[in-house]
Image (cartoon, rainbow, N blue to C red; front, top):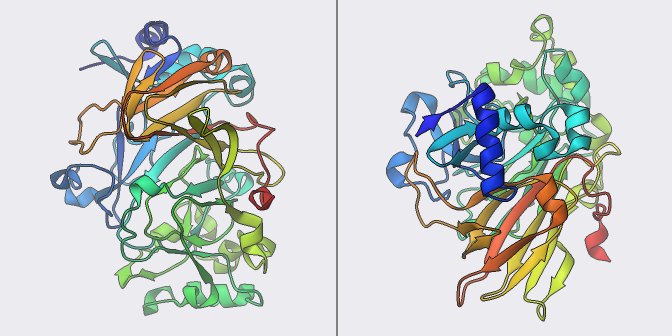
Length: 413
């Protein structure tokens, strides 16, 4: 397949938008993590989880609608970037957005950010991720990066098995002091630094989720997680061992200014302390789906699965669309979205949608698309072509797109 860049990518993007009537076909984007063990539920062929070499680590993530590069040591510059595929050519979504701007993502987001500032992914691990946090915008700017709020939804279709630890530690126990956490960092090279003794784990339930702002410690568990988030890959790992495996200290300080990397008090001060020791943490972060439109009679349900504000702003949001066998519906959205099909087969506009059973590394699929803002606002038809199986699609949106979305806790109403 021919890869095009620059002006040629802009021309190719225009042709793809016209042919797809505002809907772009995306290829799978696979990302490894050298410090984690793949959970092997991403539908990737069993022989391909180390397709990039054992030195790069196993593939445990698939990114969706991404214009953000993965911050992995030894990675090629396009790792993490989504590619649009059209008529034997491919080009990055990042190049397409750079060339066409508002034509793809809308004028509000383009004028403010000059890029598609969010993305989503599946992450899939055999066990838990080390307790860590993501820097705020102000903190990340000190090392030339951007901050990273994020969210989680656990798709039932991907979680028939929970793997080794389907629990996530969030924050710190009330009464924990900053000196306690400084002590944990001081003990980094003595084995387990004991930070999980100062936190609380919550059992993860498929079909639910969480909203997590920057500067909050969290150690995600082993459910496959759909994760709409800000377009950044900053973090600081605070846990020295996970399941007995070494967590390299450079993962603690990779996004810390060089002159502060030995200053454990400075590193701990990056945490939003009030949020970490919040005694009502679950009440302020937990999500359950909320039906927005549709009904059994109408043959579809469109549910909010990610919603709520972070520090007073809606950074992203996400929905789960279910279309019943043989049914179709027209969806209108406020803005562009990245989509992944997690169950069934059907059609969106002129493009086929089908959730694959197994994918070889480098193989093209028909489960992922990106919908431009113009098409989203005009509306697009989604049809289920199956006789028995529901068609289920996850889609996420950019910042401020859905002011009408629910707030944290609204699922109780």
